Image 1 (tube, one colour):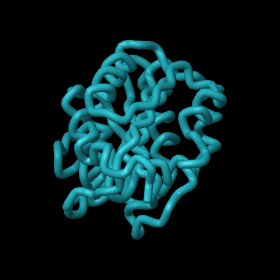
Image 2 (cartoon, rainbow, N blue to C red; image 1 turned 135 degrees about the vertical axis):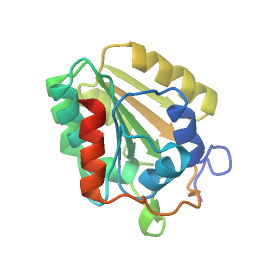
Image 3 (cartoon, rainbow, N blue to C red; image 1 turned 60 degrees about the vertical axis):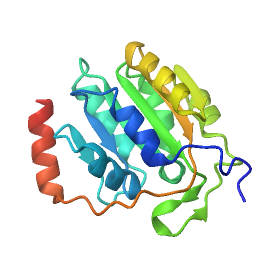
Image 4 (cartoon, one colour; image 1 turned 90 degrees about the vertical axis):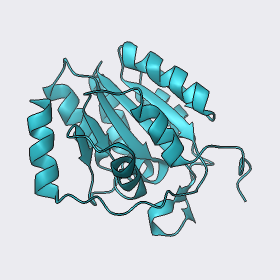
Length: 192
């Protein structure tokens, strides 16, 4: 049993709240249920859905942020994904892209493979991001706080890291109905 069980919003509710604040910003969405839920909630050409490649969303987002310094780049990530690629946090912190906003939806489980526990209940990913050099780091549990902090981060120079504690419920969402080459083509055209 998670200590916060029953008190948190779902990842899909958190994703929906964040997407309400976005317009044409490039959004890199990690693999698994986060991509599926975002696709169901609000598919946009500016969304790059990860199909596989666990742990790589912030690395791809970093490349986009460096290539497009005048665009605010947003990454939707999960705790399991971040744990898979912790080195990317250090690279982001070292390169300090001002236009980089990294949101991590932390449900303390590998949700796409059967809810096996991660170690994010022990390894505080927000503190890891701060130690890695992210400029703005916040941890929230409630929808209102997510909206407030994300709005603030969209206005500030980053890199920024927002850890959103969510429950382990997954939205009943089908697969992303686009093939990877199509996702890539439309994303590149949308952010050109």
